[in-house]
Image 1 (tube, one colour):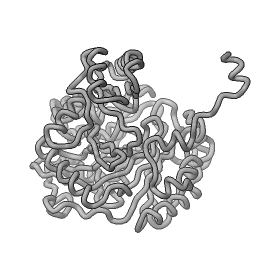
Image 2 (cartoon, one colour):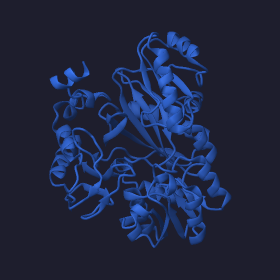
Image 3 (spheres, one colour):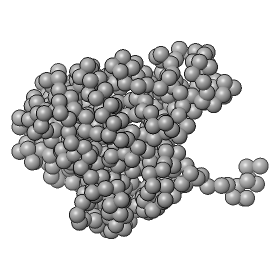
Length: 464
């Protein structure tokens, strides 16, 4: 087992990794930017090193600075968390070169699954269902027109690299394709330094379903069931739950078995998530894979009883799945044990979604049976403007979905954050909405639930 791990991240996920390390008896090293000098991950790590100015490009994304901290502190391994360098294959290779274990999959697998069109092709070859679309990166606008004509409108143009909804455009006719193709290409190039695009059939009313997997370094893979991540705004997840109301035991087994076989064929190790779109006929189609720990991993932990972060560390240390999980991976993991829901509490206005950095003047987390809080926030903590707006993840567990919803509503009402605007009121409204409670929603739920405000008469006159 490792003696010391550096956490190449910040905020709640850095603190989450520190908690897992403490339970495993492993020393930890926190790295931090000047903006995070007073953060809790700095306070609770055994050692802490400042690696640069506030901006992520000069600190948490600065590979030489991170590796210098690893060398100075003589760590055995690096845990990347999520975001920042977590899916950077170059960083994983640098760790290997420096004889520091990267807690994640091999760099070649990360690189393959990080390029979405290559990942689609790999998924197709190993038997996962894939939406009809281009057979690789689109060469130009003319090829895009040809593929769209073959697949049938509407189609989705997507950036081959990156995510978060950037470089994505819905195209409903040949007439609008040229302009949308060009706009997506420019946006992808600016966001990811790569303007490559591919195309797939657009599903009008999809649900977003993802499966959690764990693989060891001895060829064993297991899936831990699905998460429902359909409640989104601008392709950013707001609420996640497990299990999905639309995935029955038969579908779970069919897709789960395919996923396990596919990941074994790829030689996948450590934690990963395979993401699918579900169409109106409850058919699942592979869209991408995240080769890291997900923000929403706690809901899977709640319905399986498996600590995913400790599992990651033990797998990276060379342990077999049967020892990590305490069961035969060939027989699968019992799933689900009740129902779990996670709400992402962000520092943003609940109606305009404008970011709201600043000082928290009062902070109280709810407790009680079945309630979990993953956060690095506290009273008088400052939420800086340089990073993701996530303040906390509020997770609840119940014997069924109805109890989980009631528990989440209770917990949201007892969560206090003062001094800054947060998304707490938004989550309370969503949990009270009839369609959400009935499980009747798709990825356009938020568009219908919170339609864009209509321009005032004054604005109309000004625009005229």
